[in-house]
Length: 193
Image (cartoon, rainbow, N blue to C red; front, side, top):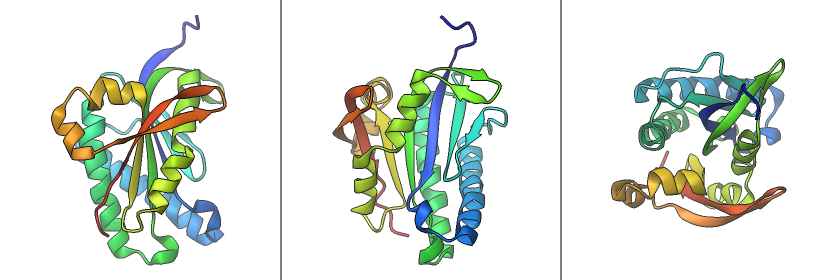
């Protein structure tokens, strides 16, 4: 076992439709991605993980220390991110309106000289790119956010609290991608911009 492995909540935010935008719009959206995430995390009482992020161009990976409760991430971060995206949508025209897919998973990761690695991180990356998440967000033009959580996150966090189950109304979908054969859960925020 790798002695450098540490447990984290893995949060990945991905900008929908990023590749269809002009270079100028992409630059602006990347800046806005950080702006809305930093504001949502601050409002949730979650410190920005300065040395535990990985930029992927149209997305960002945040490794949140295990000391931050997953319920805080599920409830407060998602709520505050929905609110920040709503504010963004009210100030933005169609070419630069930002819609996000957010993946939530947890597990062991390690750092090498180029970034973060680990099977659980691979799983989180597969979650954010899950076709069912993309389709759910596209099918809800009024929505700004689709949240995709792993089955273990759902069972360990959401399912344990009836208020979270009722509030988020996640739906179960197959999660069969490459080495993963499991289920995931999707919530699409139905807030109008």
